[in-house]
Length: 491
Image 1: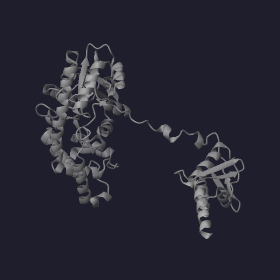
Image 2 (image 1 turned 30 degrees about the vertical axis):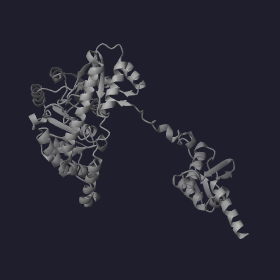
Image 3 (image 1 turned 30 degrees about the horizontal axis):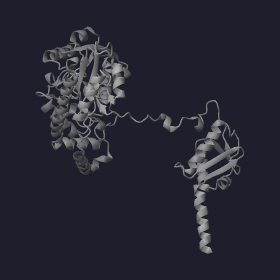
Image 4 (image 1 turned 180 degrees about the vertical axis):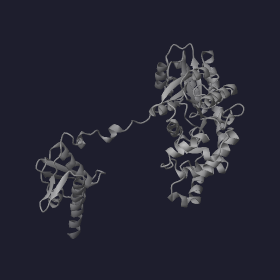
């Protein structure tokens, strides 16, 4: 009999745990649900708070005692006391000695919205990203390109060798060892002449431009940008109250006559692989641009975003290397070849701007994780970075060539290709198509193809013919061929 009684008690206990715990206080009902992941005390707190904010519990209403509420809910006194204490701490209720808790007087017109009136958490969450069989986005990298095992080993090594430094802040401009390796790499591969002291490790181009905008803000207000050109610099400088002046781009790069005729004192350029058209600025125009900067106290921002990915001949030397002591701000990144998720980039400031930078940011802390910086330093110091560049250059060259062959096969004379021979994208001009860019993008989406709007690169005006931007980094050869075949039917 005793065994049977014990079993019966256990069943009742388990059944009770599965029930919702309900309490009535006047016209107010409180329900605690054991299956809800939210702690019981928080459930009770939320419900009482909502009744107070909605006016269901008017000012000076007396709450049941902790003991009585616990009995009503069949809950522990700790649960009720926890809810009451939080309400008390936030001022929703107050206590009277030997009388209990009472609802505080609130101005209902300015009180925060009751919980039930708020949108659910899921209302703020974006939907799942669209899935495309053929993704021609220009910033996509090869899905299998990240050197996971090598990076893990470098991370562990950096963690083991530098653990004592992880209890303090690092250098504002970035880890000295990493900056020294970046300096050596830039001098050797890009022709950049600088000292590690001029390098700032950043969390991508966005932060680099934020720094430049702050440093130049006192004496500059108008920025010339390439048109068509990258949208990010426009957004960053506009957010810092600069005026944006679009300058046309041709085969020689940014139009120097338009630039000189403007009142711009800063020029943002991508001279080694113009984004998006792919033009290379010839040396004569580079020298003329440098002369424009130095003769008027102006500044050039050189974005060298993907110069390592040149498939024919050697990479184009940097603009900065032509005048290392000039008014040239150099920006580079690890995103295009290694990983945009790491948020690792670098900025090279001329010495003339270093004092201003250090004055403005003297109270700041470094923004890039020291662990990531040390991992990158180990990765570079052991030669993995330059081996990775060579490997990725071969991989992307194959994809680049497959894309060009596919365009030639399926489009033939219907398309003109710009920007081939470098980077992760080409531009496709379709002079005879009857469809607009919007129509092509929509028709492509219906066939599982993602296209990035070329019109987003324009500050003003539009291309005369339908123009497509075709990135190839994120797909394999077969996907590129199939995607181009389908696209040729759409256009």
